Length: 145
Image (cartoon, rainbow, N blue to C red; front, side):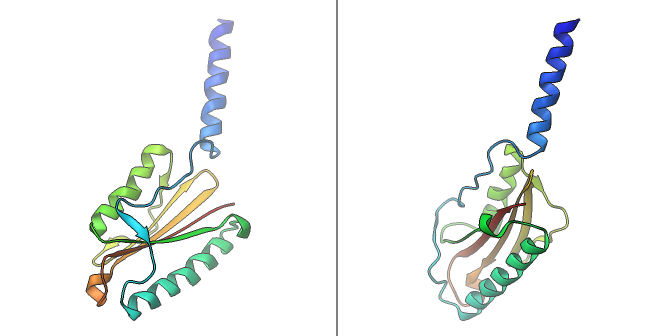
């Protein structure tokens, strides 16, 4: 009987650690992604600049530590917005929670978010070909509270 209690306490402790953000919080880039240099579209560059500004302000408002912020921008020349969405949705298999309050995929734009314990992740992706550019441009911002 005593060993059952000890096992139950160990399991409870492990579940508590997992709920508090224990585990892998790394976020791999989308498949076939390259570092973003330019989409070839001034409109896309303007959209990315506005996402950067808004996302950082929202992270600050959500008490994310400034020094923990990691911003990355990629371009995917061989894929779709659905591929990008599925790539990030797969994070839920590694303990990330998908935020329902984000709009998700709507037309030519994907705006999504995930949390893993105290780590937050925001994703913005846009089909640059619809705005005179090339590829899928993916913006991510990750930080810890």
